[in-house]
Image 1 (cartoon, rainbow, N blue to C red):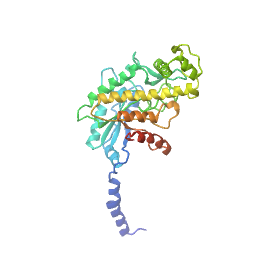
Image 2: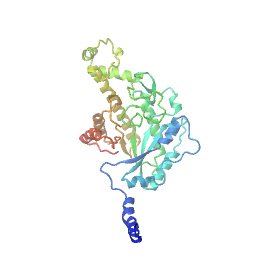
Image 3: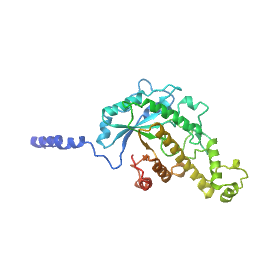
Image 4: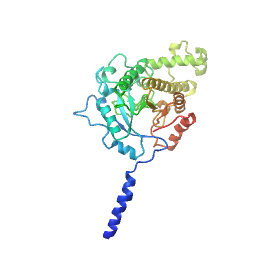
Length: 347
């Protein structure tokens, strides 16, 4: 049994030693990080076919800023998505995102906006300019825009410019912009079937079945080898015209298969570069970061960490690789490339 004196001593120690320590803000970490994925649930509702019943609760509660600060974080991550923002063509609704931005700034915590135009609203999906990614194995479409279609970067620009106008004032401005690439989470990988928006047909695989992807492969392979004779000699094929060139039966096997995988990876890096250039033009006074990958890659994920790092260094972009809490070998694999090229990192 504790004596009354011992209990009093315990209470005093807790009040003046333990509680203050728990309430302190952690010092900034070596690699800056943000907290949470606010806005995901909001996007889910519209991805499932309609608006939430009643008033959707705001993403970031009044204590959100304090929670991130105590852990040493510098910002909340807010998903700002095209799908719920423009449910009808030309009619924009930014109220949810504007409220969350103000909530965080009232509590002295930053907001990083992840722009996600890769999931288009229904009116665009049903329109003539929409070109979805297409599964090479089954020929089915996934709910994500093709990185080879010229209309996709135009769709990104449409959304970016509307967002820039909505958040242009100091009162509503985000602290930094996370540049989207594609895939399930806007990072440097192709669709994997792990996303909450109804994926239609989706799984980890090769997502280059659309006509623009096939045409790009043909053009770049002819450019790589110079003429069909050299291409056939390298691949062991007998194509008589460039229009006959198609994908290999076994990606990754032999020179033919390796050229395909390299093209698939380089295509993602090239599209990331387009998105970065567009964001820099439209958001010139913002701090920009880019989600260069997520998870441990198989070849069909499409991530070339060294290629993305080299590109990010040239563009002077902060890299934001996902899953920093994962396998140490995985962490070292991408961080070594970013360190080599001098690319700053956050997570």
